[in-house]
Image (cartoon, rainbow, N blue to C red; front, side, top):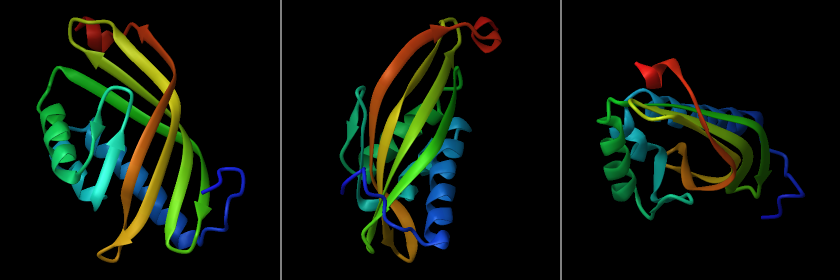
Amino acid sequence: MNQSQPGPVPLNVRLAIEDLMTEFSHRVDNGLGASVHELFTADGSIATPAFVLADPDAIRERFTARGQDVGRKTRHYWSNPRFVYDGEQVTCFTNVMTVVATAGHPGSVMSGSSTDTFALEGGAWRFRSRSLEVIFNGELQSPAVRA
């Protein structure tokens, strides 16, 4: 799909996808990582500079482990969604930011761009793929880190 030519996305599709992106952040940030894989299609994947998860089983394993790390706090944010729709699949380009605090360590902040594709599966929109490009990365101090 061509990022420079967004297609019209029906409002109900856009809202369902925005809800899905927000649900991903909520689950990851609130210890519900064991259920993140449910948001993906059967062939769903995630690619970041830190890891590649090629299927929902790998997604479940990674985010289950993350959800059990009580010393790690994260907040995921997304903004400026830009949609392309071909009638079957939606691609959404967003600006993203993740803040991470781990007890005893300086916190970190990452900002970049995410390209997500979505498909209908079982009557619901699901992630087919998530791909992250990190543009800014740095350390920060947080009261949660010092505690």
